[in-house]
Image 1 (cartoon, rainbow, N blue to C red):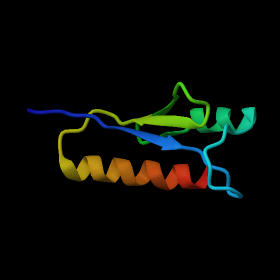
Image 2 (cartoon, rainbow, N blue to C red):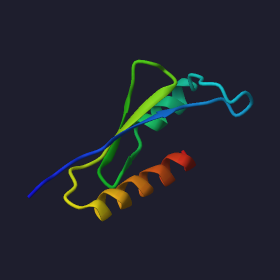
Image 3 (cartoon, helix red, strand yellow):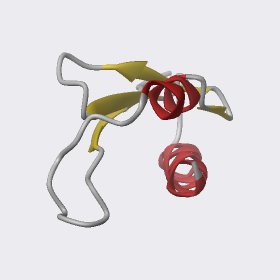
Length: 77
């Protein structure tokens, strides 16, 4: 059985300028605490960037559902 996982990089941007920006400490802590269906969030080198790490998947449909649910939760965060 083949298994795989996914990582996605997300940049935090200012709603006023559209440029990458570091969020306030409380907002960054909330983002880093975001876990959805086994997908976790970790910080990156740049303060304006976070990364998601999916759980181990075995099928494409499972991976797609994982990505969609994480992205939906992130958009609400």
